Structure formats: C-alpha cells, structure tokens
Amino acid sequence: MLDCVLYARDRFLNKKTGKMLPDRAQMFCAAIEDSEFMGDKKAFWKDVYGVDMSIMTGGIFKDPMVDIVPPNNIMSDSCCILDLDLVKMDKKEVEFSNFYQLKMNHNDNVHALVFWFDV
Image: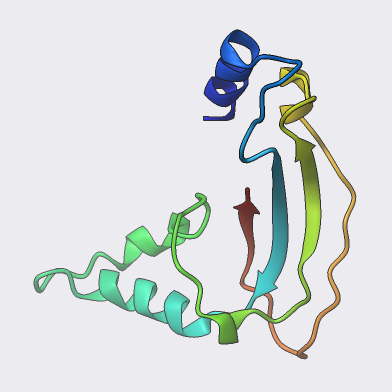
C-alpha cells in the first residue's frame, strides 16, 4: 500500500502548504517463544475429521503469517529496523536491508521473529 500513498502524495500534495498525515512509518522486530501455538498447529493435523494428516506439518511454519501475538510471548527487546519519512522519501527506499540485533530477556527457544509497523 505504500506505493499508493506515495503516488497520492506526489500527485495531490501541495509541496509548499500541504501536510501529510501520517508523515512517518517505522517497522519493528522482536523475537517470540510460542511452543503452545506450534503444538496446537501440529496437533491439528494429527486428526482432521478422523484422518491422520500429520505429513502436512513439515511445512506449516515456513511461510510468513499474519497473527496476533500475546505480549507475554515476546522474549526480547524490540528494535526499529526501518524508519521512513513519508513526506520526503523516494519509492526506492522501500527496498532495504538493515543490520539489527535483539537482546533476549529470557533463556528459551526463539520460535519466530515478529514484525510490525507504526505509522
């Protein structure tokens, strides 16, 4: 959707007097432990209406997913991995790579990295 926002900005925003809201977007990252979620997803395939489809569990955690993470599952600090000035940025800035590190708050397994944005 960011392409659409930038297109509208370039086409309709008066550069001298116009205001753009929101004018900033940030993307964050943190690590989570969620053995309960993983167990539930694997258990589902063991009995699908009486049929053992556990063979399906091999790839269920390879694709990204959109979900809600309970706050108590977050096991690290969070860090900002991208900070965009939506008023001045160029479309090319959406393609990015960045170095970051997370400080773990608990000694446990990391089951996933979660990403979210704030605008």
